[in-house]
Length: 179
Image (cartoon, rainbow, N blue to C red; front, side, top):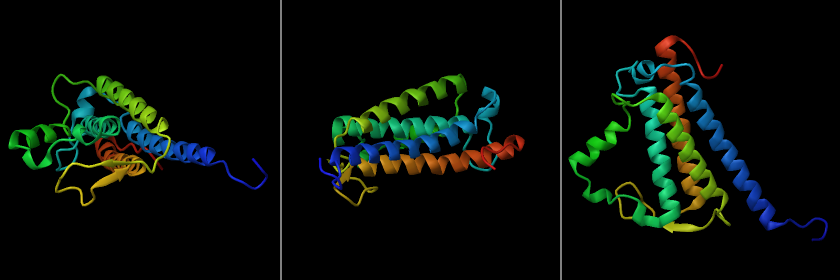
C-alpha cells in the first residue's frame, strides 16, 4: 500500500471497534446503576412507571438477543408484529419487571452473555453496510436495515434505558451512576 492510501479493511475494523466501544459505554452506565443492590432493591419501583432496575436489565437483554438473532438468522428471527396477541403484549410488558424468583445476579449474567454474542456477531461482519430484510411491521418504515443501523438501534435503546435507570437508582437511594 502506498503512502497516503487507506486500507478499507482497516477503516471498517476501526468503525466496528469505535461503535462497539460506544455501546459498551452505554452498557456500563446501565450496569453501574445496579451496583451493590439486593434483589429486592433491583425489583423496587421508585417512580409511577412500572420500571425497575432489574426489569430494565431484563428488557435490554431481550432487545439485544432479538437483534442478535436478526443479524444471525434474518427477518424470520423477528416476530410477526401484525399478529401479536394481547398475551404476547403482556409477556412483552413483563420484560420491564423483575419477577419473583428472578435474581439480579442471574439477570446480569444473562446480559453479559447477550453482550458477548451481539459483539461477536457485529465484529464478524465484514461490512456494516450489509443490509438485511425486515419483516412487515407498523414499527418499520423501511424494508431493510443495515448491520450498522441494528447496532445503532441497540446502542440508542441501551443508552435511553441507562438514563431511565439512573433516575430510578437516584430515587431508590440517592446514588447516581454519573456526576
